[in-house]
Image 1 (cartoon, helix red, strand yellow):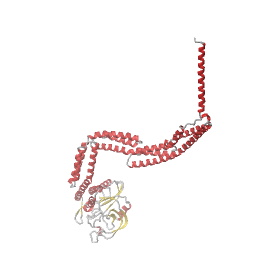
Image 2 (cartoon, one colour):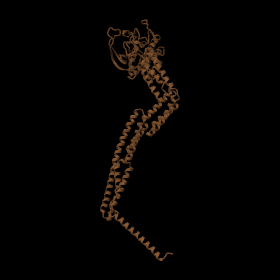
Image 3 (cartoon, helix red, strand yellow):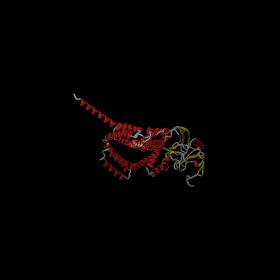
Length: 574
């Protein structure tokens, strides 16, 4: 057990230790008070706090309504600088004025920032509105450009219309930001459409090549259509990226299968070109350049193994084929013209009229001979220097052949002249005028029939051109319609074809050169045989043969035709 003196010593030490700690704590507290900023006017600190809160509320509002950070950069920088500036030390209350000045400045700065933030909002709103309007205009312009290229823009057009409607009700920056984003998405998608369309077109070309090679392309055609439909519905670049990936995959699958068919297809193209070349040679066309290019293609064929190589081969083959195109059409047109003249000769022997007046037998198809329609067809062929002009010559010769066939058919037709004739109906069908009012003139029967919706509504016997000056077969439209005209002879006096100035009452010009449908009061007789030498019952010498290429009829009948037709009325002569 410790002694009493030891116990007293320990307690004394405890007391001194406690007193020391207390003294140090008191000293520290006093020091903190002396070093604090206290001592300034509290109202300045309070005002600074209120202004800061008001500014932060305004800044948050700007963010909430969608003001972009780019408009608030300077404000945020000033905010950070204020937050990093500490209050001055107020030692023993000696620095109170500086503390008050600090908080007073702080309150002022926050108030200024609040005003700046409030001012940014209308500026940002107006600028974003302008930007949205401009982007919509650019979107609309790009829509038109891509639509003119045949690209599918219906979905994007609908999106544009929706964004345009939003612009009318937009008020806040975030509203305009959304429209700007939609416009940018729409324009990016539109700009990507061309590349997707090219990919899809390449896929389609491969499918077509496979079809030419007699491969089953049903599955690929379905995939092509699926991709095409998806492209038409694409509304974003991401949509098109997915479609592009799918097209690439489908294309690679088709390309792999197509490689197997390449040798067969290239050989088929070579054979086709050889056939064309042989045809040109047989018809004495210069072919040395064509032969040189064909030989190059044959060499290229040996190394054509991929789709890309085939495309190069196919383009060269297509170029050669196009180069031969005009010469081949010219050969075909000449062959068709020869066929036409063979028909003229053949029908001329079958389709005849024996004239009791002079005892001669005439071919009824003399209007198709060289001095008639044949002259027109020869001119078309000889003057054609472009593919389009030669194609027109080919078409006109084809029509002339058909007209001759119908002429012979009508020659054998015993149907009364004022009833529908099969040849008439076939000609109207050929020219797609079955439902119109149509004038049809049959030279073999010397009859004119007016049809409406395939039914005869008027018919009259006529007199057409004499063998030396035939009326011209063909499909015509009125070039001039007039009344009370005076015809003057284009032939010199003394010519067997000269005639005195002749007044007529009604005339319809069907062909350049003075070829009319018109009345002829000097004639009394019309119908079969009157286009050849004959004696008119009226005794007029001018009525003793056919016309100078016109179609004559009595005045009353011509008046009816003139009054019931117009410039749109087709005229078919055969």
